[in-house]
Image (cartoon, rainbow, N blue to C red; front, side, top):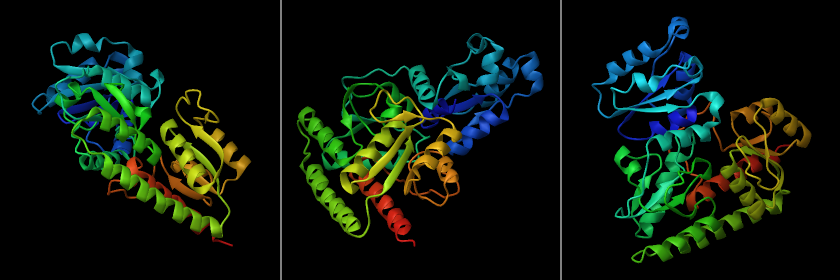
Length: 362
C-alpha cells in the first residue's frame, strides 16, 4: 500500500485516495510527507460495506484538477467488494494493493502498471528511473543526475516517478537508473548511477546513443572527485583501523554501500541485509523483523551501522549513517543524494565523519 502511494504521490496531476482505515492513511502520510486523501472507514463500513464511503469521498474530490487514484488497502480488500464496477462511471485509476499482496516495491510496480506507460520513439532525451517518495534520497538523486545530464548536453525525458502524468505515460526509449529497487522496467536500460564506476559506465553508454552529447566533463569530474575520496580515506586509515560495518537497506543501496566501503575504506562488511528480495545476490541475506536485526547486531557488534531508525534504536551507541527509510527524529529539508558523483561524495563524507567521531572516543 505504501509503495503504491509513494509511486502515485510523486506524479503531478494525480490525487491519491487511500481507501482504508485511519491507520492506513496516517502511516504513508508520515513517511511520504505527501498530500494524500483518505476514506477513513469505520466499523459500520466494515460490516455493511465501504463502497458508499468510497464514492462519497470521490464525489467530494471530483471538482479538483487532475485524475483520482484509489489505493485499496487490507480491510476493504478482504471485504471483496467490486470497486471497479462501482467506480465505472468515474475516470479513476484503481490500484488493488493491500499489505498482504507484497512489499513496497510490489506496490510501486502495481501502481506504475496501472498508469500503462508506453515508450514514445519521438520523445527526446533519457528517462531517469528509480525515483520514489519512500526513498529519502529521491529528490536529491533527481537533482544530481539532471545536473550530470545537463553537463553532457543530454536532455531529461521522463522522471519515474516524479513528473507529470502525461510524461509518465509517454516516456523516451532510453532509461538510466538511480535505485533499481524501484525500477520502472520501461525503455532500454543503459545503466545505473549508484557509484562512480557505474556512473562512468552509464555515461559512456549514453555517449554512444546520443550523437550530440559531450560526456567528457562528467568523466573528468568522476576521476577528479574519486581522487579526492581516495585521499580522504587514506588519511583516515593512517589514524584508524578499517571499520567493521553492518548494512541494513534495500538491495540497491545495500550493494552500493558495500562496494563503496570495501573499495575506498577497506571496510570489513560483516553483514549485508536487505528487507526486500536479495535476488540471489552473493553474501546478502533478507531480514524483515526487528528481532532478526537485533540478533545480527548483537552477534557482530559492528563499529558502524548503515540503515534506518529501526537499526539505530537497536544499538544507539554505535556509529550510524541513515541510508533507508524511516529516518525518524531529524529534520530533512535540503535534498540529499546517494546517486551520481555527488551521492558517492556525500555518502563517504557521512561515513568518515561518523567513524572519526566514533573511533576517536576512548
